[in-house]
Amino acid sequence: MNFLEFKDQMFPLACFTIHQVYAWKPGFDRNNLTRWIKKGYLVRLRQGYFAFPEYKGKNDYTLYFANRIYRPSYISLHTALAFYGIIPEAVVQITSITSLKTASFTNDFGEYSYRNVKERLMFGYELKPVADQLAIQFASAEKALLDLLYLYPFYNTEQEMEALRLDEDYLHNDLKKELLLQYATTFQSKALNHRVKLLLKTYGL
Image (cartoon, rainbow, N blue to C red; front, side, top):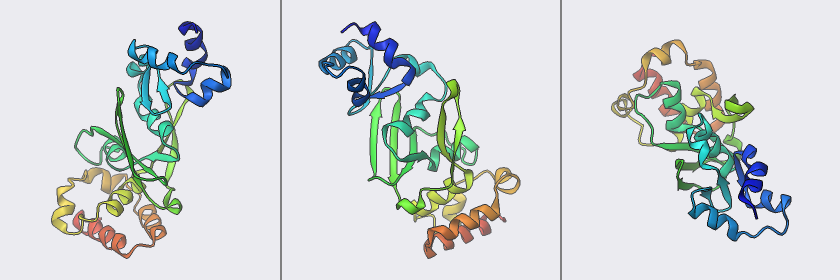
């Protein structure tokens, strides 16, 4: 098959699956993908998921692919907290929450990490519009904080809370405390409630 014909069809999708290719061309030879990856025409994001290398230079697509290659999922934890400026560190991995099993993938766009929660805890995220009329499922600041405290139980002392070095200006001026507490009750976790109280005490909220 002619690669340019293939690219004209698939490029607007940004991220596409082998099933989408077969839906377009039922007789498509999958060996073409292997050959095009070796030539650098395509990037394998994970088994069965592909993108074009041109998207490396486009804003937000690295985050968008996090949603696409493992679903359902939404961006949360360290990636979301860094996005909001709540934690000071630059984040290497793109961290997400999923109701599927915990997983990780590495490809030319980055390292993708997914942490599992129960399906009823898949809430507190919104669609953030990005480039080219796309949208990313992204945790609110409040839910990202709760996801972190829920999944990382060692944050259970004031010293550990201080070690997070959360941005106090954000916590006092932008964090929605009522929403944080409302979301926390949904977890139905005494341990999380304890860590939330510790967070509020440590940062004087």
